[in-house]
Length: 278
Image (cartoon, rainbow, N blue to C red; front, side, top):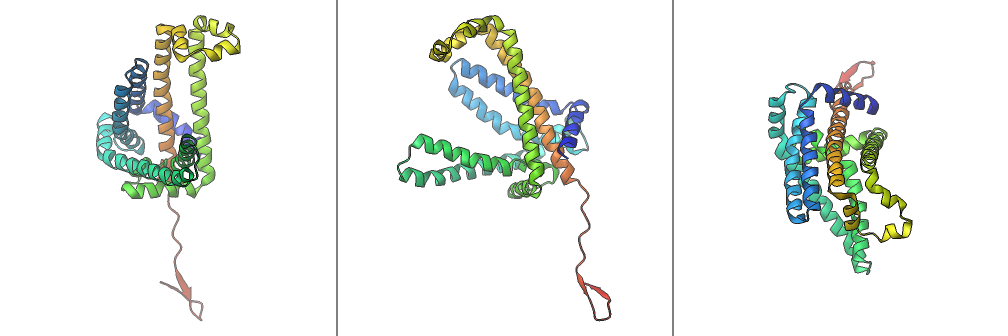
């Protein structure tokens, strides 16, 4: 099912152009936020990043609506995005709030025992974020494909994840492999493009290289090299975001729209062997 869903996602990316709108929004958010962070406008970058995350449910709803079927044009994309926006946004907010509260509850006993705050926070975040992400990752697809409400979509995601753990783990491993491949190709292209600027770093031995500050490395790469990296990251985010979201939607769609098996009839036989259904 995982491999078949990946093939379907690639096919849908080719025949449903509106799916690329979500990837473009993610690439644009990545580019603008990175430019502001590099330019020193960290506060503005954080605000734009937050607004982008708040707008993301609209694009998710549009993409999932196009993959679900029916009107896969621009009008259908916008209609689905508007219809499911608030449910996806609220369900995501509930998950984040629950994860944050869990982190605080986990940190309390360690803090009382005198453990370092930074180490405790890091371990708590990792220990909470990974399970939450694993079990609630499909809440947004449950909203669109099965028209679930806010809390029911979270429950459905946990049910979907636990229903076939082997399938779920396989899906996450394929996602990880795709992400690593896209990152590797992007870094390789960037390295080849600015190879002449990276030559001084290659000539340095390990000690001087470790002593260099991020500002010195950025100055060595230069503005042209930085722009090349941003452009490559922009297109990598578009491709990766579109592919991974389509893959996720196609996997859930295969399960959500799978024909349900007939429910077993309940009843009993009498002393003459006749069946009476309840």
